[in-house]
Image 1: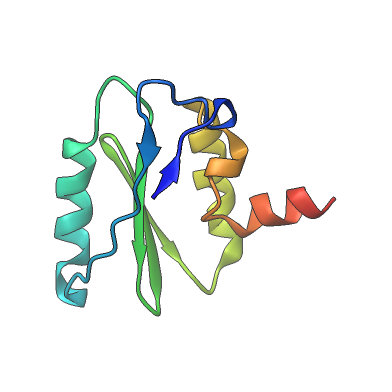
Image 2: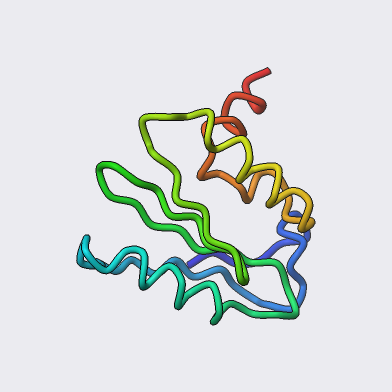
Length: 103
């Protein structure tokens, strides 16, 4: 858990809470789709989970299934998240954001 600060740009919540769960590998696509229809419709959120081969990044009504070995696939996901107004530092799933921060 982490207290929300002005930097987070999420004044409608008081704290961030990270939940860790295990999802059976054969249920990844199904769970990702269910999450995409369940995320808050008033604010731009995302959820993500991964296994050895794929990284699922889930936005409201949109799921990206990135092949983890193909880092270039993260670019499209990152750009999509930015168009929703999600601050770049919150899109920390992407190796591109980590690279931009180093520059």
